[in-house]
Amino acid sequence: MRKYQNIGDKLIPIIFILAILVLWELVVNLGVVERYILPSPTDIVNALIVNWADIMMHTWVTFFEGMTGLLVAVFLSLIMAVVMDQFPVVKKAIYPVLVISQTVPIIVIAPLLAMWFGFGIAPKIFVVVLVCFFPITVNLIEGLQSVDGELINLVRSMGATKSQIFAKIKFPSALPYFFSGLKIAATYSIMGAVIGEWLGGKAGLGVYMLRARHAFALDLVFASILVIVILSIILFYGIAGIQRALMPWEKLKEELE
Image 1: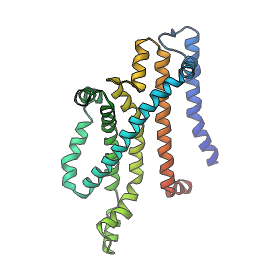
Image 2: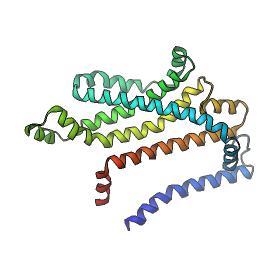
Image 3: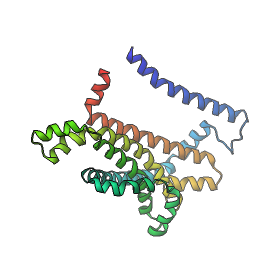
């Protein structure tokens, strides 16, 4: 029974999306909305196929920027979260700054990065790091500090060192939080790279979208958006797969429930 329920849960969003696409196609083909304003799904797919080589070339640039920025953000987040967990005074000092940093729109910061670092790849990666750092750090620090205090006291009374407590108790317990933040950050990474490309560059989906918009080729703009969505979904479920591989006990827990 549970198996059929899971299949139904997966089919519902697919059916909903297909219904939206069919309605969209009908609205455009019946002339309710002009194609130069809103291209139909078939127009978008056709534009993607015809311009596949160009779009893929720009896609690899954006993907590289996004992945590089995401990896840097993960590295910095791990360091920051561990330091904040081990030294409460550091958390008290830095945590409010992290929260305040998220109130400033990234689209405001990005032009400054272009002025400081030029129009090369560095400002794009910097933008990705900025948008990915916060969700990973906040989720990981929450996970590290959500461990049962009685459990920590128990293993400490049995002679466990601080490093052993962290490696055997705190970090494994924080992994679900870490992956939750990482999945969010992964979807942000591609969009962060695109935002950086909007402000200047020679290649990337952001640059390609601007050129298509200036040429009033909205089908190419939507084709680029489609690629961005697909990349984000692949990253999200790719990380979810890594999470299941590294945390097999979570799947067992779900099956028991």
